[in-house]
Image 1 (tube, rainbow, N blue to C red):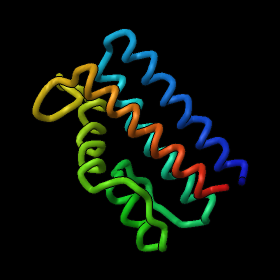
Image 2 (cartoon, one colour):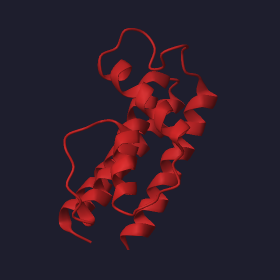
Image 3 (tube, rainbow, N blue to C red):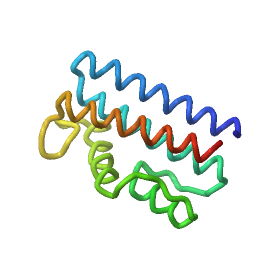
Image 4 (cartoon, one colour):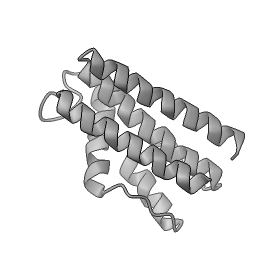
Length: 128
């Protein structure tokens, strides 16, 4: 594993751990932000390890599509990508809720954390 890959995965794990701390404090918007960031960094670690060029993007669906074009398939549905993509801008530039149509709750955050854990496990498996 390349050093830069390992660094990205470490940051991803830190975002994931932060999301768990935030959910415990009922801070759901920042919890979701950290979930999105964890998954984004996890995906980018795979780009780095496989030497796949990528432009600066926070769009999870776009990153998944580039991986597919490079014959790398990950178990992340388009719906999951769209959900994660709906989080980024509202949490980066808050106007109220991290989600466009409603405020997140503990259940949404728990499911999102589980998603980030799943993606992290899968990508680590692809890197090894």
